[in-house]
Length: 102
Image (tube, rainbow, N blue to C red; front, side, top):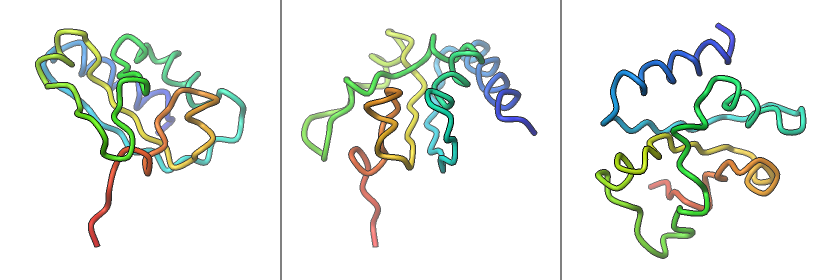
């Protein structure tokens, strides 16, 4: 299945379920500059995008409440495995924001 088709399916789900929040962790192999963010934009998911600027880094600070995310319609949280995508595309580098237990 093509990535754009999956993202459109997610968009349709989010439009039909306005109180749902989705988190995506992407194992990122996209090499085209702005390619990953362009896919999300073309699928129409930017209307739900939770901005990286609102994420608490390294466990300092709090995430917004679910009700706040729903109210602002910022219900799609996306993380990438590539550190450089945060600055270049505005997609959160996963290890800046999450912790994995051993």
